[in-house]
Structure formats: C-alpha cells, structure tokens
Length: 438
Image 1 (cartoon, rainbow, N blue to C red):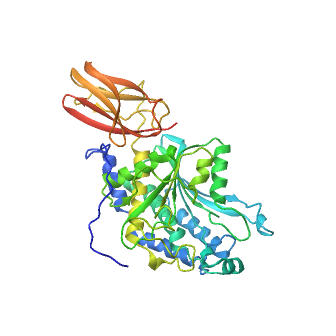
Image 2 (cartoon, one colour):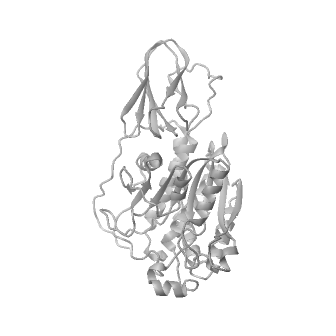
Image 3 (cartoon, helix red, strand yellow):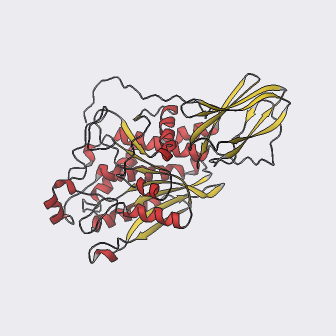
C-alpha cells in the first residue's frame, strides 16, 4: 500500500471538553478504542470476502447465507450480549421463486441499564454486488460471479462485530444507559431478480416505527476502507441528524483518533441504509469513505473497485478501517455512557467543592433539569453552548447560598443537536454535554 510523507491538515472543531481526566468514562472509552483489534477486523473481512468458499455475498446466493451464519456465530460467541436474533423478512416483489425465500437481518443487543426502551442502532449491510462488471455480465452471471465485497461492505460488518465485542465486555467497565443494537442488514444492494434496495433496513425501520420504538439515532457504516493516501472518512446526514455527525467529529478530536472528517453542513444523500430511517422519522447518518465514493475529492481518489470482482482485502487501508471503527465506538459510548439518572426529587448532599451533575433526562425534548452543588455563597453562572462553542443561553447568573440547586433549561426554541452546559462559580469551571432531540 502506498504511503507518502506529508503534513496532515486536520479539520478542526471548536469544542468544550465534556469529559475530564477525573471522569472514569474518559479512561473507559480510551481503553475501549485502544482495544479495537486490527487482527480481528482483518479476520472478519477475510471471512466475509470468502463467504464460505463462494467469494460472493450477492442476495439469494449461498455465499450470502454463509455470511449470515458467520455473523450470527460471531455474535453468539460474545458471552455478554443480551441477545442475538435473526430478523426474517421477504422481498415480496422478487421474481419466482425468490419472493418466498426468507432473508435475515442479524441483530445483536446490549440491553441498557436505565432506559432500555430507548436505543441506538449501529448497522452495516452484509450483502455485496458486482454490477459494475458490466450490465450484460451482471445480469447473466449474478448468481455465480465473484463479488467478494471486502470493502463494500466487509469493512462495515467487521466494525460492528468489533464494537459489539468490546462494548459488551464487562472487563472494560462500560455501561450504557440506553440499549445498543448492532445490526447486519440483508439486501442493501440492488439485485437482478428483484427491484429496489435497502430491503432489510427498510423492514427493520418500518417495523420499529409500527411498534412506536424509541430509536435515539442510527449510524450506517458502509464501505470506508479504500484510501491509499489519507485516513479520511465522510459523513452523510440530513439537517435533523447532523448532531450525530458532529458527535463523531467531536470524539475524533477529543480522543486524538486522527481521522480526517468532512465539515458540516454534511451532504444529504440516500445511498445506504440510513435513508429508510429518515423515511420513518428517525435520526440517522451514513459513515462512508467519500460522499459519493465514485467521485474525487480533496482527500480521496474515486474507488475503481467497489461493486466489482476486484473489491478484495489487499486494496484496503486497514489503519483507516481501525480508526473509523474507533471513532464510531467512541461516539456511541459518549452518547450513551455519559448519561446518569440523577433524580430531581432525590438531590445529592452538598459537596465540599463545586459540582455540576449530569442533566436529567438526557437526551431530552424541550426541557431538562440541571443540578449543581456549591459549598459556599457564590456568584454562579451557567451558560449553554452549541457544539461549535457559540453561547446560546445564559441559564443562571446570580449570587446563591450554599446547597444543591436545580435549574430548568427550556430548549424549545433551539434545533436538535449536541449542546454543552458550563458552570462558573468560585473560580471553578466545569462543562458537561447533553443532547436535545425533537
């Protein structure tokens, strides 16, 4: 793989630190991202590339079935997952006899500790395609042609397997307030014997909406391993979901992961499994090697291998694959792991120092409660900032007596997103993060 000496100009993001050296979550997340194993990522991609010896994961082929079995077995080998289930669906408009052949999404779950009914989805499709080998070749040989799909989308599936392994392991001490679901989606790519795409994710998102399930956010991880020169990845998002992309940029810088990531406003496009979650009113983003991968950009040369028989492991930048896995793991952990349930009617005792507690509820819609403790009579300010560091509200600005106090923040006039609240009292500064979801 080609490597050149160059100065990497990192895209910067003005931010306020919401994790500190004395916060145990800081160390937990660092240990988890350090534990992302290049060897395990490589193993998963090679197994998926081979697909049980079939070298193809095209929908309605034996290799696709072999891949589903491999993913299920890998999840089941993780002893601390709450459950592993096969989510069966059909493409009813497919040609006979395929319309009645079952397909599956493979769903692994880590149940949340405090609000298990709310959850985050991290998904990646596990089928592949070789439709860029030529229309005639594709249509005549779709069920026998090699479509190894190492990058598209062996990289995404390897990432969710590795994230599930680490985040479910109690040895790291990580606990998520919300349920986490790692989903390998079937039938994302277009086929020959059926129309349309994103069938598995559409079934999943529509089922979630019909059951009125509370999905906080969805991240689609789709082909992010091709780049010989830069460790670059792109975020695709609609306006309502941009807070998720900003969270990835935030943790990338906070934990010094070293990715180049595109700046907001993020492009809005529909070429992966995230779009069906938009259709059902959920927040979702796509993480992909470039937006779109068939065009050049400042940090990217268009990928000539995806959707061909040449999409193989040796074309990948595995350092990039590891970093994209790390940044997604850190983002999900920061969203779900920084939240604590501090009951408003059960305030903690007065601390010896100024203490800023995590708001509750979080994420929240419109209003949330912020508790803080001051040991002495103090001039107190609590300010609210957006993710770019712009002050959007002064919540408290007055002299207060010692004790535990609660401020109610009404964010009804603000857009959904990641925000920060900072206390200034007795020369003490402390900042925490919260998420507004409407």
